[in-house]
Image (cartoon, rainbow, N blue to C red; front, side, top):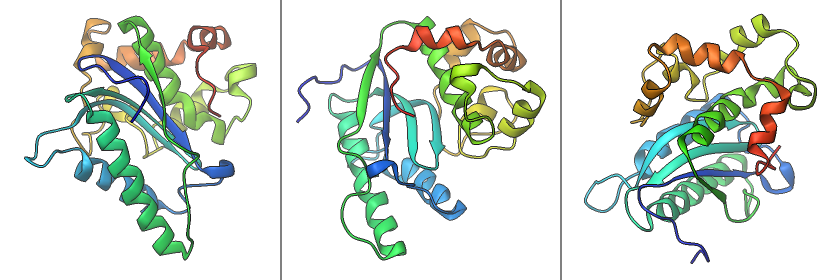
Length: 207
């Protein structure tokens, strides 16, 4: 049982990484399996959703979610089922045993919608480290290249936010309409990222 319970109606940044920072996704089918399990495990015994999913990003050795519990224990149940199910799949496929993730998932309550919006941008920019490893410290050098890369990256909710893809499972993203008239507005917001914006998200310590 978690020391700090989750509160229905609030948003939480949920993240974890592989033990010893090892990769948790080795091939494309691993990403596909994880996404399939997100949809499969986000339901209680009666088939009702455990959480609202606001944003996600899967990286080779870690993942990010923004979730809101539909039930008191919704996030804990969802993450337990997802973590256990994926670990069983991964261990069987790659002939390994033991833990896959670095302990229990981490969680941070999101206190307001402004923070929520900035956090979605940080999460959707995470894949940039695959082509510009120092983007968090030095900023993004080539936005044209980054935009092309992000629009080809298949393992995040970014393309759903800019209206170019349908989500693989239900996403609760209506809140962005309060900030942008059109999906293109979110892309412009993403492109306005600066290193100083990371100061707004000091609680983020996952690499």
